[in-house]
Length: 425
Image (cartoon, rainbow, N blue to C red; front, side, top):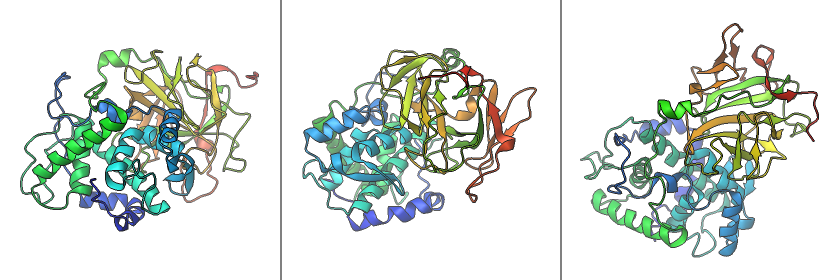
């Protein structure tokens, strides 16, 4: 087994997470060039981008079934994918997969290689260290994946910067995994030889538990103009006539300003804080017609071409939902999806986190318009604007040092679906 990351080392990521920008600057791993065209060749690929992003365990029930079949302690074990927010193991792994675009299957493969997590049934690491390991791994694999996806690129080099690796990464998944090896696994010797052996072991371990490592979409791509024309017009994700606040401008899940700044936050007016932690009389609704897919307890994804496959076309994602709609439901624009809440990750108040994916890969939220409101990035994560002709701009009212934020200047009234006074259930 590739048990290069020792238990004591697992105690460090908590500090890493608190100082992520500074630590990242100390390890400025460059990115391999993205391929110019979509091809069918598997040369230079360790894992397909589809297996990296979604894998064989698509959705929380699939994760739970897999763990139950192996009598894994993780089935009833709590993890903290967000510090201070414990979740059952299947929920936590599905959450990490959704928000970081790193599949539970890949996370479990790496955990097996380094900690015998699947074969021995119980990790040797302490509970907190195990949570830190999953969180650190998902966050950094995600960063490396999106660096390559964005095409900001120079070849990966050995840790001593002596020379680039001989073979460039053929897709974002392979780049991210090679960066992971060089950062977390490599412990001396010829890095190319060590990497090749590690990649072979990773593919073998993955395929033992989850099937072909290169199945599905080999290379994720940015949407074209034709793809964008197929995206239905999006509306604000709450019911018509109701007023909510723009409380969080474009941000990533690790709190950084890194690409793609994929989501924004909205909070029902008059519902600050988390007491109570669910706004049962307020409704998050579908931004456009679609089919609900990839079940998680407090997160819902709508597939907007309706085929149920997140690797074709567009998806919108709605986070922090309570009483959410089940999977496999076709919904119309404005149809209720659930109540905004403080569940499903970090939340300083009842709200919904909204983002857009193309082929299950997060897109910069500033590239989209909601009910005529163009989203714009701010100087820092969670800051930013919403701008619409003929209206006063709305500045995000994020004030992280205050328990209750003054958000009157950030108010938005939705035009989506039926009136707020209508009964839904």
